[in-house]
Image (tube, rainbow, N blue to C red):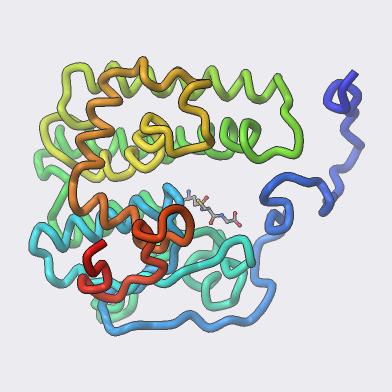
Length: 282
Ligand SMILES: N[C@@H](CCC(=O)N[C@@H](CS)C(=O)NCC(=O)O)C(=O)O
């Protein structure tokens, strides 16, 4: 019998800091700061504090797309936040994101500097500020926002559920892996059906819904997440495959993927970004 079958929850949950798993050292049951740490501020209107995980990449793709579309005032500095070392619990970071997670964004172009936390809120904020990648027609805008919020609600099942138990938990437990594999395959099928008669997620136009969904579900379909492509049979979702490759081919997406990346091929990493020239010939 496994520990899983033997486990009887105590009357009151206790914090077991030794629980194992990849993120055990940074997971805590309390919010707030653990230490004082200043955040750097560069010369551009936008200051992004992030890391190239799927949630971080959504926003760097948006900035690179805005710049590629000619919105010069979307220039940004992207600073690296090392979540494995607890940078997200420094006092300055918590002032920008009280939820202590990357990405966190400051917009200094407003009279009163504006903080924005939650990647979906950042995409919406930037889309509204620049009038880009969010249709103005009410029906098309609503469809885009439906998919944006679909992503925000669905991806925790993929990352925190499937990814955690398949790749990061200290042992392989059949029950959660089964439960979350079923849900993630259902989500891939939702996308596959939507993309069967739509070029992009929300219709004919490339929008913030694509930018939100691609780093998670496009990444999964292309085999970048959790080494799970075969296990989940991702190649069978033909429409998701078509869309994932089409989005990945965009130059701004290629750049966005690199920003705040500190792993993988050296040629695909740009730990900090302070100007277009930083990409060099990468
Ligand atoms: N819903 C949030 C999720 C952000 C999130 O989960 N960020 C992770 C990295 S992908 C993080 O910072 N984890 C650090 C921690 O949990 O301490 C968003 O989309 O912005």
